[in-house]
Image (cartoon, rainbow, N blue to C red; front, side, top):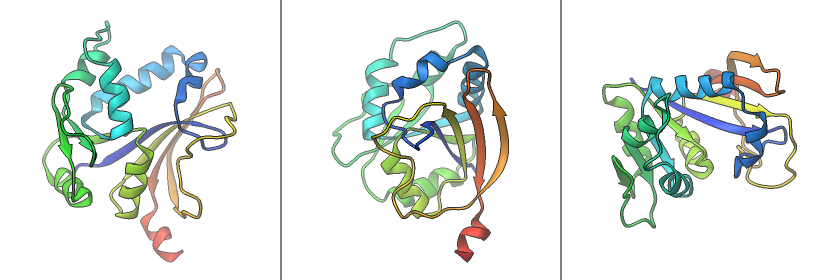
Amino acid sequence: MRKVIASEFMALDGVIQEPMWTFKYTTEEILAIKKEELFSADALLLGRVTYEGFAASWPGRTDEAGYGDRMNSMPKYVVSTTLEEAEWENSRLIKENVAEEVRKLKQETGGDILIFGSRKLLNGLMEEDLVDEFTLLVYPVVIGEGDRLFNDGQKESFKLIESKAFDSGVVLLRYKLDREEAQSQ
């Protein structure tokens, strides 16, 4: 079964919104991790806001590493009740029955499904127990306001899969949901 993996840039205070503050901390090592992450998945699952931002900036972009080509060519599933069409190459809208559609995607053969950003979608999928892992790049900044990864009052338990600190002060944290612990809460 395919896994749904959430990948987020996060400030120390949990803010994930509009992560322009990440650029000054980007290193070749972090770019390599993001490339490996993208190339190990074979589909993107995006909420409307993230999709619209990506669709405005990625089409036509290329780079020597092939990241832009991969972003543009891979299947993209866009969850939105307001979009009429998803014009970015290889995009398909999911307008209703989101949990059911994601369950179907997870049952298909293929690689993992990657979620970038898309906080509302992500939290909805977590409520349905459809997110398997989190890859967090935690940045040494406090933003002070903005959308945080988890909703107030939300309770989850995780098992650490991997951690790595970078010289830039960024920390990579990979977790899988600890479903046994979450059920006992």
